[in-house]
Amino acid sequence: MQRFTWAEVDGAAITANVRGLKRLAGTAALLAVVKADGYGHGAVPSAEAALAGGATWLGVALVEEGEALRRAGITDPVLVLSEPRPTAMARAVASDLRPTVYTAAGVEAAAKAAAGLSSPLSVHLKVDTGMHRVGATPDAAVQLGLALAERPELHLEGLFTHFAVADEPHRDDTARQLAVLHQVADRLAGLGVRPDLLHAANSAGLLAHPAARLDLVRCGITVYGLAPSVGLAEAAVLLPALSLKAEVSFVKELAAGEAVSYGLRWAAPADTVVATLPIGYADGVPRNYGVRGGQVLIGGRRCPVVGTVTMDQLLVDCGAASRVRTGDECVLIGRQGDEWITAWEWAERMDTIAYEVVCGLSARVPRFWL
Ligand SMILES: *Cc1c(COP(=O)(O)O)cnc(C)c1O
Image (cartoon, rainbow, N blue to C red; front, side):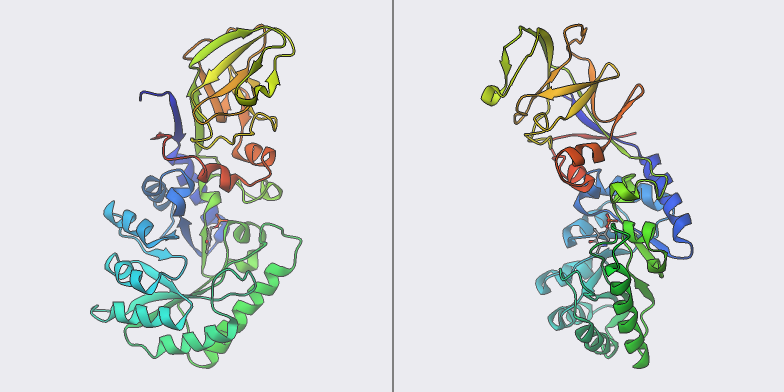
């Protein structure tokens, strides 16, 4: 490492999280979602840690992400969570990925891609039950389910939907979405079409809506030890897997009134010691993190990030009495001594969610697996 900025990922935490989620899921299988490079943690090691904890499925957003898992030697079932473009279907099949389908063109492309296989290609049909992102309408899903059943090249392994507000348990939209999924399943059953697996729950669905557990739960954020919302923080024991750290690269004393960084937006109210950390917005620390009250841990204490976060560096007010030195380890996410900064703390300061914080850590930050 030339620049002392890094993330540490605790694979044992991921394994323990999955074990706990599986207990909660009861008889439902657990699909660990490892899209977006395992929510910024590293897709392949995250997948391995999740499988060690009892996950039996993996989920990805892109065909390329599924291919990367196969290249790493992972042979477990992988579901591509959205319908691949027809031109990508052959590659999905070549890597033994389960495509999601929700259009007639998608079913056609899947059948074509499956034509040479020795056994039918398993596909999952996605129903839009109210989120209106992707998926077939309930009526279209029944038609597509029927069309799938008539294709000997295809096997309707799964019928599923995705929730829009499962992380807000007081809203009744989730129960309504689940009811629509059941209606589609019942209509298909009436026509003699029975998928092996019915699934709906994301992490929040698993935690907050027991009726949504069905045959399989698709957990992403909780696998990494983060709650899907602040309100669900107590719903399961989760161990955050990722810590973000940097070593102080420079220390200076500032006199009262001296200002720092682009825009000179913060001036020292009194004489103080300011440390420079070699991490910035190109690594995933928001430019306004300091302005919004963001802190880092140095010497087991919380110290404010001051001034504008720059592309590669940021500044921390350590206080006049600080003995901070170049090379001291700082924690931006994680624990130091008795203090702890969570991805959710970042998220709340920046009006976003912990998902965006961990996915926002850029490829420039090396990930070290403990
Ligand atoms: C991302 C995703 C999930 C996982 O959601 P979490 O809230 O991270 O658990 C599950 N299902 C689908 C379809 C997704 O796109």
